[in-house]
Length: 146
View: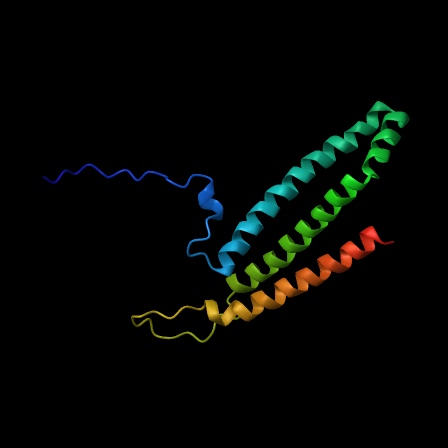
């Protein structure tokens, strides 16, 4: 018995589907990291505006807040913010270069089985992520060991 009613697909994974490591490639994890760091940077922007608005409460309140920001937990949060900004910026440059057609390989006739261009820009991905890791490590060393 055929019905024209569309079948409904249940979302069995829910939020877990964001990070499910089934058949994900390296680029898929970079996509997830780019999305999460973008949300984190937006949250920081909002909190920074709230923190700066605290200046209107007076000098004592401002100095108390700045003293709290000098503690170790906030130093770690500051480092994570720095790492998120570096990752997001360099991954954005990688995405921009890929979208503009760099490192995609020579165009060819679309004959089945289709070839993937992922292997042409995968070395760029590794180079950019190694550079991001190096900057994050060096930035952390200057943040924690002045």
